Image (cartoon, rainbow, N blue to C red; front, top):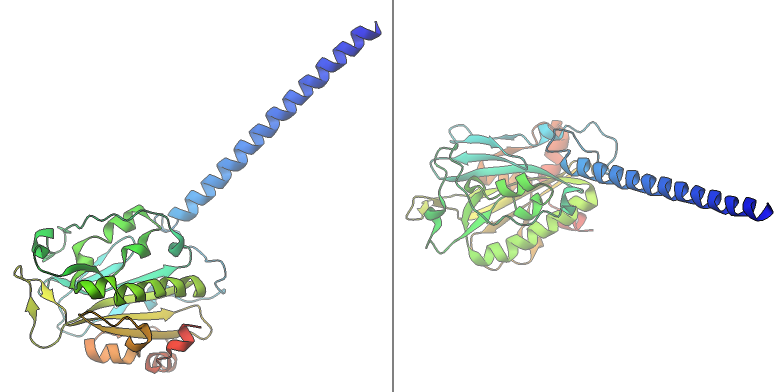
Length: 289
């Protein structure tokens, strides 16, 4: 009798253990599913139209969209094209962008999307070159909004290879000084939670062109604003379309200098006093510390 009762107890305990193990497995599966879902949502929030709040970013009423508006000089030909990861002002006469602008956030610098590496003509944009227009030119197809800034989204990565985002660029510059600056910008975006980036060509004097008619810039600019820094700060960089120029700080200038050179007007949504102060300042050491 006692032996029978003992045997029944062991079976009951075993059954309870099985139920408990099953519940634990189910709970683990649910936790993993929730983590995957949250991670997917975070990674696609920008694509879905949600605005991410970056960890470490101060609570603020900063209007990033307004800060990304660039005022072009009267008479400058442009078609504004909004892509997933950047907005381009494209010039059909020059067949290169006047500028591209985007916000780069800390989260976006941590993206894992693989490089697309397939340049494309945007057939919806008047004057956009084809890949053949660059063949045999001796110039790189230089990104204004770098592909490495678009790793947070497959679509953003692919669209960074539209030729509306590209200029003929000296190979040594593209793979040297310009690339170093792009890498530095990602570090600053990670540190400051976000930076607003405006990049574009400088076209002065007699316009040299590829055989296809694509204008060859004499140089390039990159303008940066840290909108969540306290106080906000801005800096700009100018590079000639040639090799060398690998020391970033030597290329640093004020935003005012780029505005004078290009006729573009940046960050006009800021109060005048604040805009004037940050645009006349060029303090590379403040940015690099």
